[in-house]
Image (tube, rainbow, N blue to C red; front, side, top):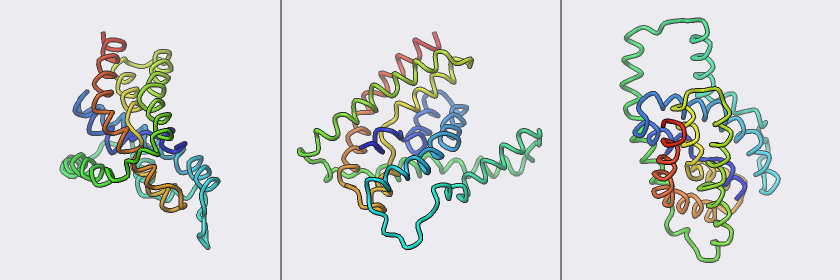
Length: 215
């Protein structure tokens, strides 16, 4: 439940939602929040949490910093380095990347649908899920909106960032639950419930953010 409450679905659901809501420029908000904020905390502090409460029966446990070897982080680091040095990408590369990116949103939505488990919804788990729902739907985006209001950045970026923090629980947590022998069914139920409720909460938060940051 700590994992489900702490880490939102900033990419698999956040990226397509932000892109359709604010425009193509909002993709960078979701990607940067994932690569430079959510994922580093997930693969360090998140791993420490699941190891503490779960069971690590691996004969060769990986370091909490092993995520730095993942291709997305190398790609992000290379892109930032090229950006800082004002290197202009050739047209053929941009065209290729744009064609590849067209498949990202459908694949993310498809993988999200595959991860949802309606059979995991059980009455006995409701007392555990309710606090997570309260945190994901109300407390986390409210706290993000308060913090964003003090940041010196354009209102549209504030709105997009807060909207991303209002996303339901991340899907990837199911893998961590399986890996460290935690309650995968309970986590799957949390993802399903928070994702279902986000169909109602996200439009409400969008209206609030538009009034607050884009008025």
